[in-house]
Image (cartoon, rainbow, N blue to C red; front, side, top):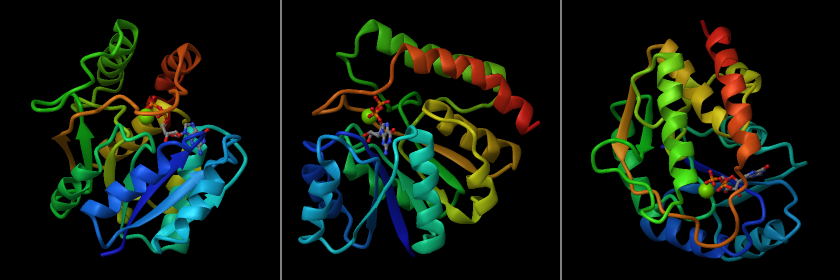
Length: 234
Ligand SMILES: Nc1nc2c(ncn2[C@@H]2O[C@H](COP(=O)(O)OP(=O)(O)O)[C@@H](O)[C@H]2O)c(=O)[nH]1
Ligand SMILES: [Mg+2]
């Protein structure tokens, strides 16, 4: 079973080493594919340094075109070049606990996609998240469920495992969404294809170092494009 963790990075230099250590502490037979968009803080260089110590680390670099584009490049590379059976999607900022990777892997045997969900029983978001961030995430999820009429609780989750059999190359190439919508577009595709979707509870921690790149502009873009997704996969 070839499992690749795809991790997009942009200015995550202070998180990389700890992330890699923790991932390999809890998971031995796994590879990491970093997709770095030439981060100005030297994240790419740091990854190259760490590659000397750990053998299962891969790096592709490119021009910065947003999170969705980085994921697309990562998914294509993991599937075509690395022959991944399963792809795990995860942030670099340690808001997704590397300990939970095992739980995702255990569940995927019975499902096509398993989502680390903040909004089912047992899951949680950081207690100290500001009101704006909380509302942004919660309202975003409620609107998404309502507009797309899908039954999932956490539609924008960025921590999941996917069976690559359900991800044809052409589908990946044609994903149009960026930012949080990238997550929604994949989920909606799985829903429409009647693939087996499972949510398992996770605690989502606030990023340890660095800044989040999601703001007001992304939130507005999100609403605008939700309906487009609905139309495309109708
Ligand atoms: N390669 C690449 N990675 C990105 C880009 N934007 C964000 N990321 C990475 O994607 C992950 C999610 O972004 P983050 O800022 O943590 O979003 P948040 O968790 O929703 O606040 C992190 O690992 C970021 O470093 C981008 O344009 N290119
Ligand atoms: Mg994050």
